[in-house]
Image 1 (cartoon, rainbow, N blue to C red):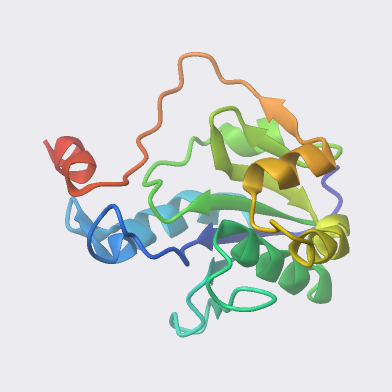
Image 2: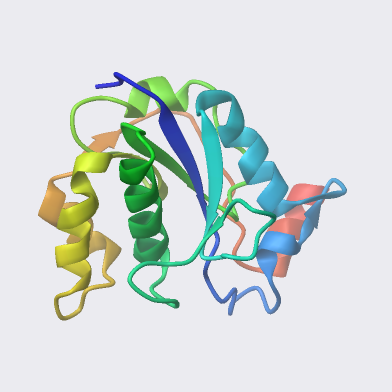
Length: 178
């Protein structure tokens, strides 16, 4: 449960191969997608970090244990940062998720890890999972998000009627801009 400060983490370390360029820097309504993601998390947390981008304006964390680990490498970096800085857990979003529902943290934060059903990057991760994720990433086929979620018996949070855009291709962004 929430008994202390919460870290917000934007998972932004992917290669954007389907998008064709760095989608975190793509503009929606004149603002970078990365900035939309940070703005969505900020009201719910004590601090926001950008994972997978160690050079991001002082708030960047390198993936752990090494670069190019995908979302789990960013989550692992955030969990260890949270653990070493006195946070009780981490709320996450992806850099390609420009909207963050205001009522989502209350639904996610609780006993154990939780994700929004259908959106694996919108989650709550207690810091107690840091060393378990180290172990997971040290095993073969270690980058599987589905495998990680099964391993920790993640809680699925449903928010009926909620439809969130996920931007994977330029046309996804173009349809939002209209």
